Image (tube, rainbow, N blue to C red):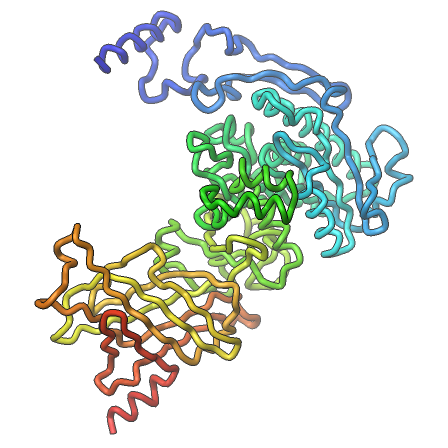
Length: 546
């Protein structure tokens, strides 16, 4: 029956197109000519006075990703405005534009950097996060913060709002070019920060401004953008440096709104960029507590789009935080969690800072230059872990348990390992089997990357390991009563803390090896037992040899 359906569709496409379509690329509109009413037969163009023209060509259509396209609403309806904030006028903004003397009369200081903030779908400049970001930016340094108000075009329907972003992008691109031409603004001093649809709006504007310094995409919107050509969405050619934070990339089919596809020079995926800690709406205290602490607006955001707005919160928190959001380049999130990608080497792209300071080169401790250093990293994925509430920044640790294999040991045991880690800064308790019961193979090593808000500062003095065997009646091989050994045997424990490369070409990685006090060279930990490991491995070996 399914084959018959495919044959009918195939015949239908053949009749209306006059030729047999390629079955492997049938979704691409530019691969065939279809006389369907929602597709353009010829290029359609509309011009908007001095700011430029927009067209609708076949490259803007895709049967799956972008089946419907319309032109933006009139300029008077969208009513794009630019609201300037400086330290002198941090509370009340000044509306400026390119058509009169508002810029000359404003507090715009062209000697300072200019950062634009663009809100997204069903959002306005009055949203709490816009004010919070603006305040944090002004607190960080003397600069010009300009909020792009396109509330007249950001309301439903979503299809219309996506079209409106193109006109807002024209408005912004024209405005930046006006500042460059008439007020000696250098394009490299301009940074556009956009959330959701605002991220793609930033891309449209950036494509109009040669040499634009930076665009930061905060969870760019997925519907009508993911899978499309680069000119339809945010992409690395839109600025000298494009950094993107993905926090809600699970797919729109699962009520997620953000892109999972890389679209910058550096793409950050905190917590794998899909589901963020603290965003589980099944946790009943989540919504009421947010309502009490932060008001109705924030509670509604948590209910509807907690993961999607987390990118905003992470960026805001990164601006003035003393805790660095260190992210590590890796081929996959699974390999990152297994500790296969760890440590930051000097003068390399191993690590990057997520958020406001992403344009800092960790190896050289300055802004990224020259430009080709960035271009080499197109679409590079960086992973990190964060907390579930403010402050979100955590330190990253790799815990490695080196397992012994004495004669009495089973080949493998299954259970839970927990650790108490003692350092000069205090004690942290951490679960080193965070995904549940874990199979530990004796004679091998088990590694996991974890996060914690406390900084151990590389000085770990002691680790207490606690072991609990997990006997699952549904897995007969795990049943251990009288004829098997449910102990785990551990030689040593390594605790590595992710840190920046130091200056002068030195590699910075805080690494500690801790050993058992036992003379046999390993700790025998029974079910629900505990063993102590100390940072005295050399002394233990010497005493064992004597």
